[in-house]
Length: 298
Figure (tube, rainbow, N blue to C red):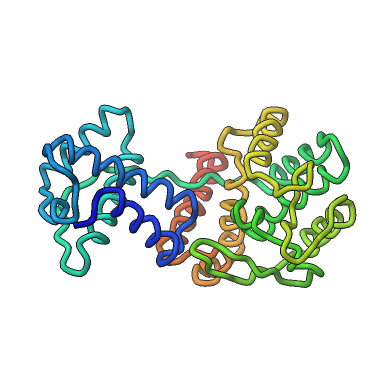
């Protein structure tokens, strides 16, 4: 029978190669498997093997989640932990896997909070103007316009390479699980990207990152997040104003202008329509806010 370390390594390869999950997801899911196996070895007093996992009971999972709760995790983290555990047990058990039913904690799904067009432009402009070098300001302006003007995830923008040059009217983007999609490039976004490329002091080889850090290496998403955090403080914007909020704004504003859900799903790179449908709630929430603020009887 495979030992605990072997099971975790097989799980890691399955997630990375077969499921094509992101590095962060693989790391988190493998860590969950390691925690589960370590808990079971102590809880049952025997080595964790595939045979042991095949006989896991609901009470075992409940005890595991109780221990994780004592570690201080909240409802969202507990729900993710349980989801990862179920996936691991199904992987180890194969087609005949028997995964105990256990109801996870209720997680209230918050609505994305869009940033207004004026706020998005002000945010990008502030970051560009406060950059220590002109080319870095042009870089940050281009990145943020990609998030707001093309709906990219920040990781998708960071993954772009010199192969996208020269720019045209569309951009091929690689999203989650290696899925590619085509997004339109607004003239303003294309102009911002071209201005950055013209000023960037580093080469634009086909296989090199398009967006570079100050020393020429790949640009870290953390730098953009910190820049946004500083700008929103200077501009007095909400703490919910994040790089990802710009993507939410892209979706919400398109929906408000009449875009259909299927088209929006393709533009955002969502695997299922249910992920896109949350934006109908955002739009309804916006209309309700307008009504409450404007109607004399509200």
